[in-house]
Length: 30
Image: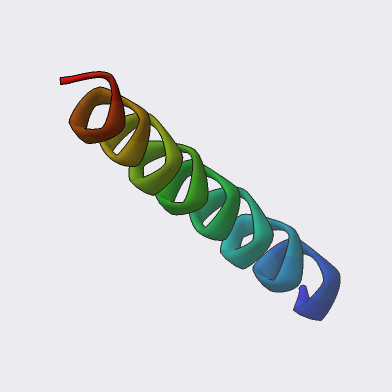
């Protein structure tokens, strides 16, 4: 149970990180 919670949190964190990186790249390209 705890491991599944950690895995879910990690996936959410990675998705948020990718969104921030993509947003930053769009701003820098413009």
